[in-house]
Image (tube, rainbow, N blue to C red; front, side, top):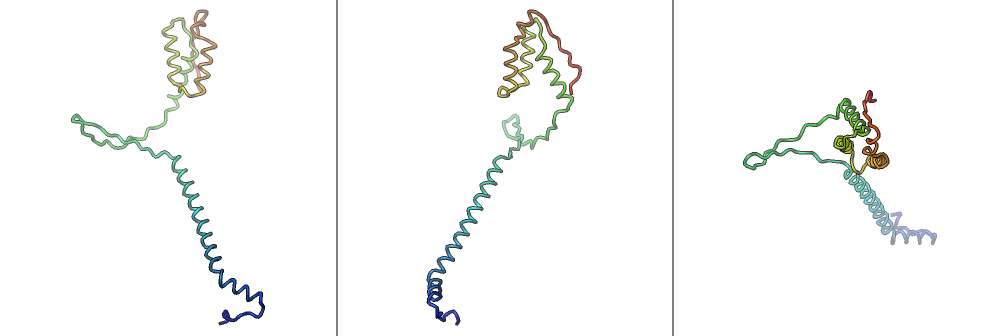
Length: 157
């Protein structure tokens, strides 16, 4: 019953009156503010997680065979392929250097060398631009009129 007692100090009485009238509104506003901040933080965390998931590749190849009658038959998942052996990489790199730097007077063979060089490059790579610039400045067909170059790769590190 001490709460029903009116204080003798008018300032304390006014404070008690204000707390009785508006205190519930202040508490409700504070509670809604906390709910809003929690909701906003959950939305930011959810959006961040969605962005993280969107960068992950989740495609799993699945093999489906079609029989002679045209019916789809499941064959399952393909087996994991292993990375290329270092010997294969060295051999491919040696072939690339050999076909890129070799010069022969036979135009058909020289064209095959150039085609083998470009077969290992993607069109969007900066290395393709450098190869293009090299061939523009040093035409193997023009150089073949003066001399030939035979490449022998001895060691690939």
